[in-house]
Length: 416
View: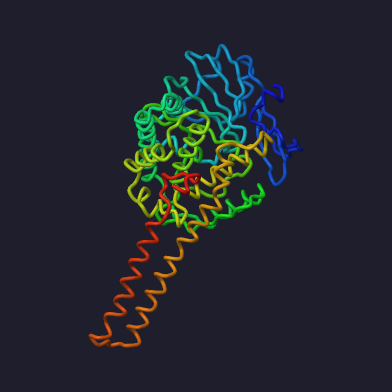
């Protein structure tokens, strides 16, 4: 397979010597760039059944896979996430290769996904690393991405909102299913460390750290979700993106990150279309759809609270991941990620200005409490002032919370 056919490789990174072992039919490769390293297992090209038999000879199967002796034809093609093979064996099978593996939770996601989800029927691993996913039949029918593009092409707001609302509901049902399987406390220190690495690697001129809401616990998040993964009321559990090879996962993530991935994919489709429709009602339909089926705590106002990160900081991370991948390919500025990132400082400045009300709230509460303590037990004439201060503190804090940017408003709509 030629270099041009290996679309999954980071084209602008230099291939260096790898000291990793590889199973029969594969080669271990390693790429290095400024601040980035990516290790992969690449298969040979597949042109016949014998090639396939060689590839799986040292791998461990799981789930339902075709019997190697029943395969009569095999062919392959390249994609951005790895090679894809088509196998004929008493029916059609699709084999998706994972050059950089997965985070180790792929099968757990497939098992936990709600009924009707499109999940791999099986696959192969090597030393506990996911190498191949098997699908017993190709995907059929249109997906939410293609349907949305058509709605945007004709500026049909109602149709576009309906598509996005259903897409949000599908994602929310997945999160309700995995909540019962795995939920662990939030991990803000590792999340912020990951964001810091991205900023330093990309030499970003902006920094963003958040405390994160307690209503953003870790779960079996999907990591990368596209509207093309959703068809009707079905969600496809697929392969990770290249960014997961450039920065391997060291932690788990919340459901909010999946929603941010889907919202950012909406931004990509909207940017590439010629529509005159505004993004805000489209984003709102997607978010409201997710809220209607996701776990109540995860979809609460506290979880979306932008002053503590909310959806915004995860959307920020999605933009950084787009830039990370384009840097590894030297393929130019990815849009709308770059345009969105240009508004981050203004977004942060607005939230910083909002903190004036938070500070005044704290000062008013402090003055009220100190007044009560100093006059304890207070007389009837001394009570009104500290009570008024505490009431003012409560009101100011309410104003501060209401000033939190709503999640449906894009970064680029700061002045609206």
